[in-house]
Length: 103
Image (cartoon, rainbow, N blue to C red; front, side, top):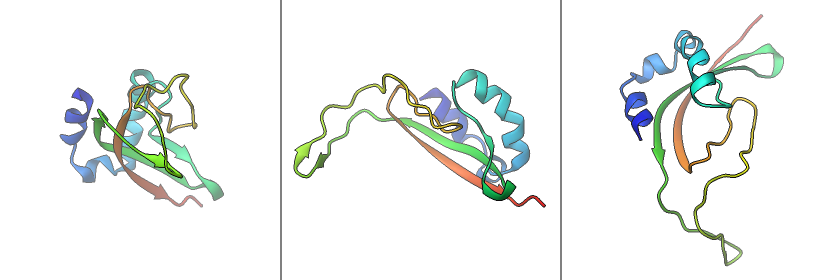
């Protein structure tokens, strides 16, 4: 995926920095609906998320209690989990999480 190639070009140390997450958050919010690179955790901790890779999933097989889970399909309707929404196209994203204590 083109975005994945771009993310792999960002050094992991930079991707893990709160400054980088703050810089790219406005872009991520507009380009990738539902995506956030910053958030707040319990006890006022700040969380920062830096994606380092994105790859499309082209095939998958699985079963639950011996029953096949079915074919891979787009996520529709989209589910939203705050800052970490699920993209419509099946994919895997590698993310570095940095937690900063605030006092």
